[in-house]
Length: 189
Image 1 (cartoon, rainbow, N blue to C red):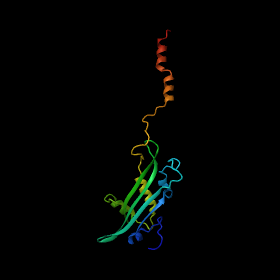
Image 2 (cartoon, one colour):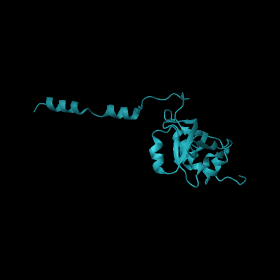
Image 3 (cartoon, rainbow, N blue to C red):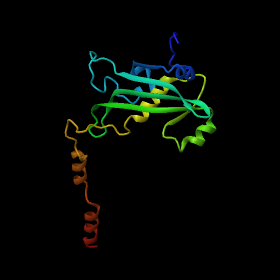
């Protein structure tokens, strides 16, 4: 397989038949949906001199012989990115290492995938003529990203109450309606 491999349209069957593997790094900007989870450089106070965030990935594929049946196509995917996110505790920037490690077995159709899904430890994908590996990498990293990103220990003390002094002063300055009612009640007719 001498020709350049297109990760947007990978022939999984040929890739597995050859027992190939690929690895690489790509800019986070090339993964639009994953990039939406990240803070923008302005929000994360990154300097222009810092290198762009890179997504590292590795895929391997193989045909696994099955006695009395056609060989099965398996793919192994590893990916990681050091994603700048917003800590939901202190609201400051936090760099989180997001890792995906997935195993896929390809089946002939949706019905087979649905029938075998409950018993399978690996993820099942329907074999198509072309697979967009970049979308698969992005999907796996998105599913591996924390739902609530936060520091192990926030760098700044986090206030645990929301006290608005102006609101408290206005509340105290407001006349008590029950005091006014008591005055009316005690007033001689």
